[in-house]
Length: 327
Image (cartoon, rainbow, N blue to C red; front, side, top):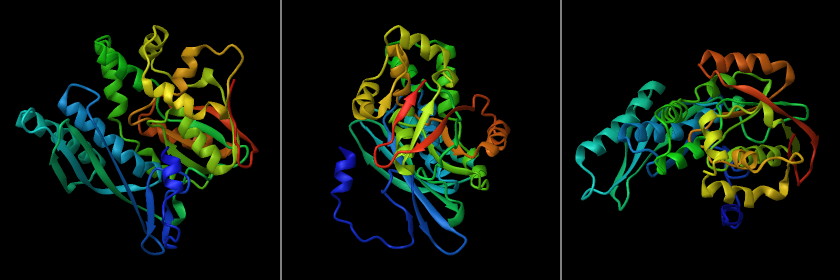
């Protein structure tokens, strides 16, 4: 639906300095300021996926800033987007949510320089993230090349853990894993900007691994093959998924993309739901030349992304109908 709405936008003539817009559903807009600087702009906000207000603020902030890193940018400041039910939510809870978001921005080395707030029926929080990148070092989601290797920076399963939490079935260890990964900044993206062998980057969020990888395939007009056995998975998420716990968004994602997906023979249903599981503040998805793989993995390891791993490879040129296959 969103694709159709954007396609019908009346904006036909765009300025030449708008280097990245809505063309391939990329992570952020990028506007060239001069020969050595371009501004990266993005926004993201949502309602709570956890009960702890500080964790909510941290997760929402990390999720919003991820799009800056996914473009190869370095954040410079943020603006807060705040909607709170003032008659229902105590002031100290609101303060704790905002403090959580500010703590993530402090980790990123940036201030929250302003924002906008409203009295809303349900709590909502997020950021406008602004960053800087060299115009020649932007990492789009449309630059993958034939033969590129595919790397994923964080494990999958966040949506499943969130669903288990809502049902009161998530263990303390599972909650810890959920908060660990969703509040971890994708800072490696800024390092990848300096690697010419890195050809495309995006982050895995609400459309799941399948949806965001298909954006790379379609933007780059390439097929891609993924080895399911290589995917980094959160163990408790696998257990809950096998027990029948999944999100409604997973089914909607599959309905949106299934015609472009080839599954391995006898692939269990839980595996299909895992690759369509919506992630919050998910990992970076990186397409790079084979001789750049060690450098990319080393960059992830330097930032304590210990689950980053090669998961697949891009294949033949596919024209307007790329295919994503799982083996």
